[in-house]
Each structure stands twice: as C-alpha cells, then as structure tokens.
Length: 125
Image (tube, rainbow, N blue to C red; front, side, top):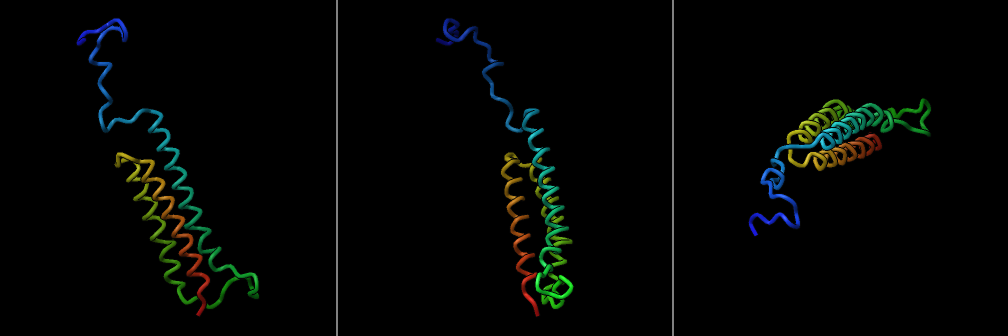
C-alpha cells in the first residue's frame, strides 16, 4: 500500500508535502496588500474627517462647536492614536500568520476610534 500507483498516480513525496508554515501564495500577498491599502485609506478618512465631523454643529452660528471640553484629547486621538493604529495594523498584517485577521481587528479599532472622537466632540463644556 506504500507505493500504490493505481488509484492516485505515482507516489511522489514532493507533491504530498504541505507548504511551509510561513509561506504565502501570490494571491495571499496581493490580498494582504489590498487590505493594507484599505486600512491606510480608512485611517486617512478617520484621522482627517473624524475630528471635523466631531466638532460640526448644525445649530451653532458658525457650524462649529465653540466650547469643547475634550478638544486636546480629540486632537490627540486624531494625531497619535489613528496613525499608530494604522502602522501597527499594517505591520501585524505582514508579520503575523493570520494577516487578514490582524487587518480586520485594525479596521475595527479604527471604527472605535472614530466613535470615540464623535463622543468627545459631543461633550461640550
């Protein structure tokens, strides 16, 4: 049964070996690059438009909230939290074994940062 060639063709040990644990196919790498671009673009949108949407006010005279209690925190999240999240997500995507999962977690964290910025913009002093 060791060299059974009738049902499966010739026994070739090179064909039966699974790919090495760290190797990714070209399609996997292309998918990760595309996901990395999505993460970077989402980070750009959250970092630029998040604070603007957080301070926007329809009922205010000039369209911007004038008294923000946590303005420095809002700007800190936009300036430091979002870029750090994007960089760590992209690095984790290409170094971790499950890069797509790391990308999804990073996108989720960016969404949470956007919600945090919106909440900080709503709190007026």
